[in-house]
Image (cartoon, rainbow, N blue to C red; front, side, top):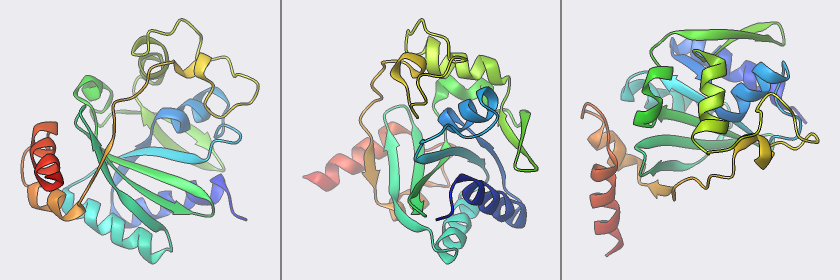
Length: 197
């Protein structure tokens, strides 16, 4: 069964085709920077795309044409938005809006890492980003540079912080709101809870 190299290469080719800038984030960036490859046993691929809502929609369509199964669109109170897809037993976690606290890492300037004969983008500066994600924000004193028994998401290296509850959202609502400068938790909350009544 195809694994990480195929997922990374296929997504990279697709973004080049659609002229979409992207970078790997979270555990995927951690593995590429620390281990020179994805973390062994990590079942998901984390990345951020930088494009218009029209391009996000086009990306979704093309992924489904490549036989990725669309799982859903999600948001959390940190104003983070993402879509989930699955293929080959892997979860592709495509973020297209990040938390306000991460703004300075996503200014269209990237660090570079090489793997499978390709050069990939990761946030800049990458060590500061990984410190932020896995030590600082989680108030964790461990060193993200040290693997933990090969576990894909070792708590001692990735923090004990529990992320805020994530809500699934009707994707059509997002496309309706996408003309706004930035989709916010308040937009989503009002619509989400109204729909639950």
